[in-house]
Amino acid sequence: EETLQASTYATRLPDDLSVRQFFVLDPMLATGGTLVAAITFLLDRGADDITAICLLAAPEGLATMEKAFGSSPVPVQVVSHARQAGDIFRSALPVLPVPLPAPAVPGRPDQANASAVVASIEQATKLALVRGVGGIVTNPINKAALYQVGFAYPGHTEFLAALTGVPGQEI
Figure 1 (cartoon, rainbow, N blue to C red):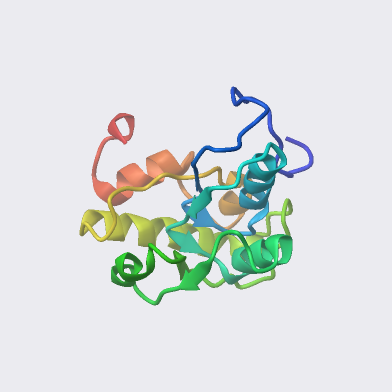
Figure 2: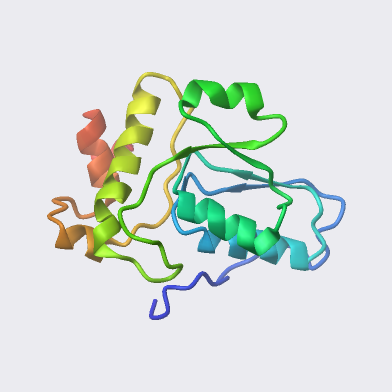
C-alpha cells in the first residue's frame, strides 16, 4: 500500500444495494477515512439503511465523519463510559473517544499518535475482559509507526494475546 488511502480491492456485493440493511464495523475509529470510504461505497450503490458500529473513536475520526456526511446518516453520540452505550444505541452510534496527541490526517499515520492506538487496543481489551463489550474486531494498524515508539509485538494479534493471556493462535 503506497497511498495509505482506503481502497476497495474485493467486493461480492451487487451493483444495486437499495432495500437492504448494512452494518459497517470500524471498532477503533481513528481518522475516519476508511469508514467514510466504506459508507460512501454503499451510498454510491443505492444503500439507504446503513448503521456504523464503533467501539472507540478519536475526535478526529468523528470530525471526518461529520465533514463527509454533514448531519450524517450516522448519528453519533460521545459517551464517557461503555455502560452508556446501551442507553443510546437505538438513536445514535455511541463512541468512546480516545484523544490523539497530534491532528489525524487520513492516510498519513503519525508516530505521535502511536500511543493512542496502543491505548485504544488496551482499553477495548479491558472492556472485553470484564464483559463491558461483547467482543473486539480490529482494523488494520500502522505497525511501522508503533515500532518507532517501541511497540514490541509483530502485530496486534500478538499484542491481544499478551493482554489476555490467550495463545495468539486462539485469538
